[in-house]
Length: 184
Ligand code: CO
Image (cartoon, rainbow, N blue to C red; front, side, top):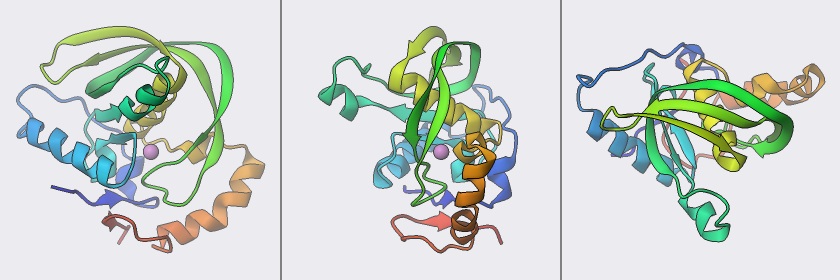
């Protein structure tokens, strides 16, 4: 089932997510639906707040990128209760977009290497040191769980420039490519 994606301006995107346990109802179904929603909207990552749920869960699928560039890991999975334990390496600028901010793309500076911890769908704990596109997308999705959006990383000057566009997006003035939910 394709779920509607919550759009910039909706308070759920600014709400801190809570960790979940194995008893969370219909988790497999939710993850399945989130994958479907992400593919339908042509995303490479999606977080639970973007489908209206303040829980600590996101998905990443880098498989199309891996096919083009074997240096990019073949990651397609759900990350439950994830954490960034350490950030290192230089800051790098990379163009980012977000399914909750349709039509806007900007360069965002982020750390190039991170150490992460998360549970998989079987609630098995993993620890990894990651970099490149994987680290980039992980940080973007992890931000969502803390109510942070990529635009929050822009300089004040840049933020001023995109602000008018953000107001329009919040009012639903964007190309209608997938089902969405706006702030009431
Ligand atoms: Co996003």
